[in-house]
Image (cartoon, one colour):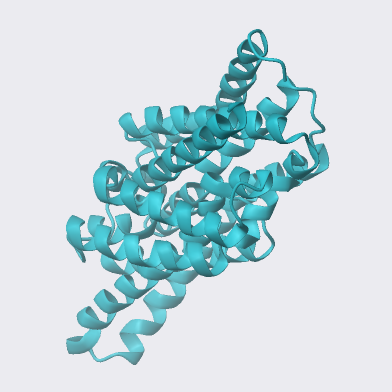
Length: 327
């Protein structure tokens, strides 16, 4: 009976994490397109849902393996122990992401679930793969920096080439279409990388197969996009810096290329860090004064706090559970 209850809780909490990812991270894909007035909020949400689900289905398994087995080897633990870790880690990650979404802050669900899995593993004295965590932390540092550099480069290249190659009367529709297509690519890479945050623990515990896990997580993410995704889209789209269409295109290309590289290596990075870093890099072309440093400071503080807060929530929750249940 205990096993059945734990399985049900794992699925419920994974669905909750998927929902919170959709709610918080939908902005990373087409928030810039909304901010630059290329798409309406409703159009953006529809496209994010479609391409995010495609990314989860086609490439979601790369990072799912890392979350499920690369931080704490859930497949090597006793079944009930791995299920308790999965339930508590998902709860801790979801709780923090929902709170940040309420504050309209685009935090990293990757940071949240990684910190939560590590915290839960420590609570039951499971083996935590510190070398993998170190490598993930290093990638987290380079994610926004790499996106910023790519954003700056893409903007310079597009600014110098588009106006020379494309006749002026066709320039606006070409840029508009490019923004939409590049935003769809961002949504695809986001779904591929972030679905693991919801269902990596499901795959690791063996409750569902890897392919079934990413489908389950993808649908949960779509639900989050459709119900609460608009909140952070407003922050990404207009509150960091005012985006012109060519800036939105450059930021989206930079972010998607950046995330795609990490995804192929199975590294759970933050799409939030990537798109914000890209926006900052593009904004720097126009000068540092165009950036909103107040909201950037708040974002950075949330980013730094996220793995530790979710890890602490996870550790304390599982420690309390151990007082009543033998694990």
